[in-house]
Length: 321
Ligand code: DON
Image (cartoon, rainbow, N blue to C red):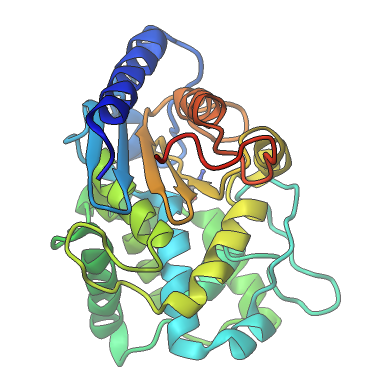
């Protein structure tokens, strides 16, 4: 347990950050998936879950939203478990692209998508999820999300349908990968699964617990359940660190220094290994599709508690005592 003084400091800092950025009006909510444009841009929450299972939260942390690209992290873990690291690497690489999340680009030589965090790589990753038919594959994914969140999760049908009928760019990428043999014939099934994983509903509290599970060797710190084999945590965190924030990943690694992943609905997760998971939710996005308030909050948390992984000026993490 953290001592009472440290807990108070953390709680009051989260409140301070929340009131500092509540009035920030920068950014715009995503509208290329029509249903997402209906969200209230003022929603804002921050949650921290420690590896001991303590929770610190402020704002609209019970508000549900669709997980979107943050799902890529967890489905990547499931695909690694299903196929093993060596096979997975023949299908999807681990190179950052420096491109936007939806860029239609494959490695010229290998014809693999560059990494599992950009859409092309995520669709290829989803295609590797095992199961007989779409229902079994979806249920395996939902069960995986249950282990990370600690409760059953559901797909927002309106958002799923909205993306399904407008996701031509993702469909084009799937066809391109089918052409190169990167993914197999069942592209409609794979795209449906991908759109459904993106439409899984979570709240900010869930994001923090999911991130804390990654921080805690794959064990959900609240339920004690193993959500993923611990041997894949380093794969996941490495890819989050280098590719999780898209064409902002380099600047993020430099400034914030924590493995993280953002989603188009305004969520961000960040993982401090063996310490805690951070979840932030605020829908308005910057030009690189990352939550404006989310980025600012994580920058400040990193600075305040010395969270940057390569900050050797700290003896031990200032957050722990
Ligand atoms: O495939 C898409 O475009 C969305 N379902 C997810 C994109 C996303 O969240 C990108 N994140 N910043």
